[in-house]
Length: 304
Image 1 (cartoon, rainbow, N blue to C red):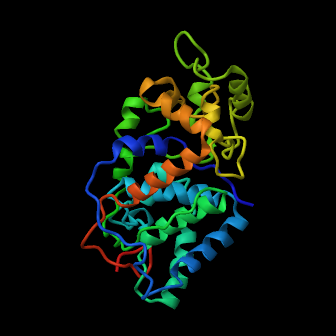
Image 2: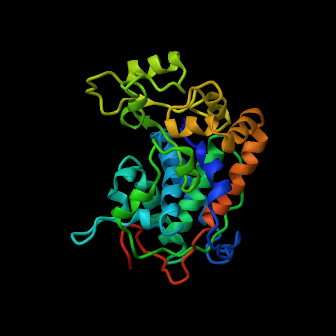
C-alpha cells in the first residue's frame, strides 16, 4: 500500500523560480562502478513503504527540502551535534521522519559498492521511485552529485510556509504531504476580523476539516490527506483547487491568482501535461547548485 500525499505547487513554482547555475550530471554515472545501485535503492524504498504508507510523501518532501537549501547535497540528512543544530532538526523537517530509509539504502550500497554512491544521489533516485511506485511517471535520474559538509537548522526558515501568498511562493517553492491541523487550522476559525472561515475555501470542505481538527485538539496526529486519491499519484489535487478544496491557503491562492490560475486549470484538465511538467521540474530541481568539492559520505548522517 502506497500513499500519495505528494505534490501540488512544486510544479507551478519550479516553472518560474529556479534560475540558478546547473551542473553537468549523468544518467549513467554508476553504470560501471555500481550498476546495481538503483535496484538496491528501490528495494529499500519499497520495503519501507510497505510498512509505512507515509514514506513516499516524506521522501519526496525530503528531496525538495534538501535541494531547496544549498542545492541537492544531502545536507538534510546530517545529524545535529553539540555544536550545531542541523537541517534535520529544523521545524519544517521534524515531520519528514523517513531519513532511516536513505540510511538503510546507503548501508546496503556500502556493502555492494563501497564509497561510491553519494547520499544526495540516493535521495534523488528514491524520490523518483516513490513517484513511480504511486502510479506517477518514470524518468532517468541524473547522477553524480556530491555530499555537502554544512547543515544548519536556521537555514530551514527559508522553506516556504503553508500561509505564503502567490508572490512569496513564486519567489521560493513548495511541496506537499499529509498535513497536520496546525498547518491549516488558521483558515477554519477566526480567519479575519470579519470572516470566521477563509472565503476561498468551500464551506462543506471547511466543516469537514473542522470536525477533524476540533478545538481543543488532543490528537497530535490529526490532519487531512491532501486529496481524495491518496493511494495514487495523479492530478486530483489540482481538480480540488478549482472547487475551493485546497487544504493550504498557499495552494488555493495559486488558483485565485491570474499568474498561476491557468496552470492549475491546465493540470486539472490534462494529467499527461502534469506528468510531463512534473518530470521536467524534478530534473531541473535535482540539477540546481550541485557542489563541486563535496564528498561521498560513508554514513549519511555524518561527514567523513
